[in-house]
Amino acid sequence: MKIGELSRRTGVPTRLLRYYEEQNLLHPDRTENGYRFYGEPAVRDVQQIRGLLDSGLTTEMIRAILPYLSGPDEIHVPAECLTPETAALLSGHIDRIQARIDCLARNRDRLSAYLAAVRPSVRPAVPSEGA
Amino acid sequence: MKIGELSRRTGVPTRLLRYYEEQNLLHPDRTENGYRFYGEPAVRDVQQIRGLLDSGLTTEMIRAILPYLSGPDEIHVPAECLTPETAALLSGHIDRIQARIDCLARNRDRLSAYLAAVRPSVRPAVPSEGA
DNA sequence: CCTTGCCTTCACACTGATGTGAGGGTTCGA
DNA sequence: TCGAACCCTCACATCAGTGTGAAGGCAAGG
Image (cartoon, rainbow over all chains, first blue to last red; front, side):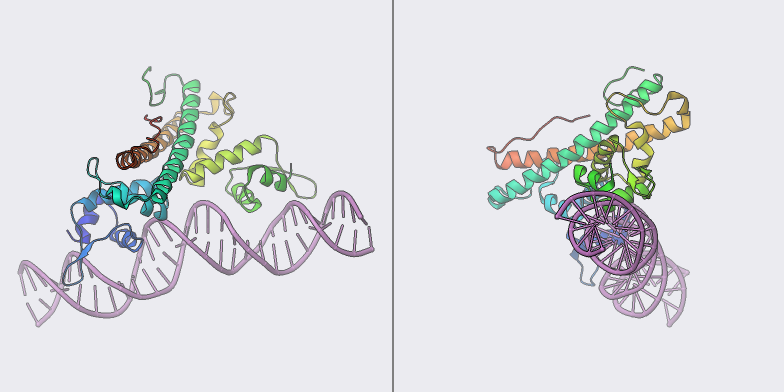
């Protein structure tokens, strides 16, 4: 598909799709006339990128981990390409993501606890249902 | 304590401590000569702010939730001050934080799965936060 | 053919978070 | 009293992520 369709299907402005390409997050083919041409998986990739950006990761970090974030099943990068160094980097990235998760979860819990304490009637956070 | 000590104790440059004040995240007193004067809880507050910023929240959102993120026990804002509107806003913030957590956890799992598949010897992730 | 709507690149500009430095006052110890 | 080490404000600079518009090529339909 061309950039316009990808934009419509993902809700991401074409400007950003071009930006993500410039940042080496997307690698569309080009048609004869120079138009960007995206395959079907690009839709998922774009959503992936958006989610990660919204979660506070930089394009640099996303670029680092994106190759390993294929679909739920397929693995894009073969084991041969994974040097111990890369594995270590990846491991570090996972740790950083985990640190973010921990921080967010901690604060979510605090907020939920506060809300629950002050308004017992209000939905008491995500984990359990009590009402 | 003065800004320099707070900076040393938190590892956050004074520039940022002033910026956070400008953003209404910190509210130090002033001594006679105009120096900022921080109380002991400022240390925790600053660490809180840093963690949340690193996790991708904006100062605006942090400003919104910070009053409700007091220590593990104490509750700073009394129930009387919590209008239903505020509660709803807070609830929305919790949801947004949750969305970030979900996105990060999903991708952490993907990365871990990849790493585990390719290098079974490597630490097989930390499947802790799921909610 | 001409308009309309895609697409291209280029480029300036803004916001949020942060770095850095200038210019100047205060405190304190040698 | 001097210098070092603080503190202040102001302001410009940077980086990432975006918005926006100009200037132009390509394609399909009246």
